[in-house]
Amino acid sequence: MKKYIYWLLPIGWMGIIYYSSAQPYEDQDVKPLLKSSFDLSFLTPLVDWISFTYHHSEVSVAELGTAGIVEFFLRKGAHVGVFFVLMCLFYIALRSTCDMKFLPLIIISYSLTIAYAGLDEFHQGFTANRTPYIGDVVLDGVGAAIAALCLLLIKWKTVTK
Image 1 (spheres, rainbow, N blue to C red):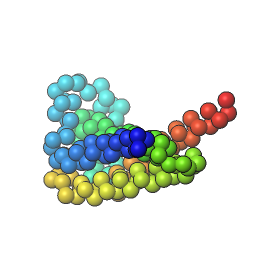
Image 2 (cartoon, helix red, strand yellow):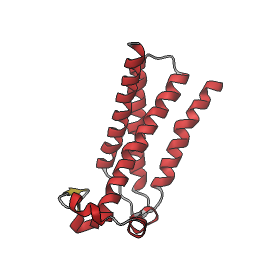
Image 3 (cartoon, rainbow, N blue to C red):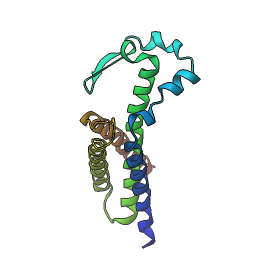
């Protein structure tokens, strides 16, 4: 029974993700903080060339300003990082409670992470000023894939010692 305590890790982390996804965009907008706390003008020549469309919106300095570009990459980096952690927590919980070989643990952990990423985006569709987007699920999957590669590397390093 004690080993099931490890499931509190991914469940708690999913709760944090859920809470964050339930916040309207305005409550998470860090552009005002960036503008008031940092002089980002030195970044403008470095990011001025960036211009692409993401979820039907132009991402460029001309459209968002330098603070907006920084915020965009912070938010998308958060997708990668948050789901990297979730994948690792699923792996820890499964490894602690299931008698499985390494590769099935990785596959199930990855699958659970992607499933939650999809649910998270679906949930955002019910949040004010937030929209679900499959591109964010792809970013979440990248974070989970990086976690899987890290776990594979750790496993390989411990086996080859």
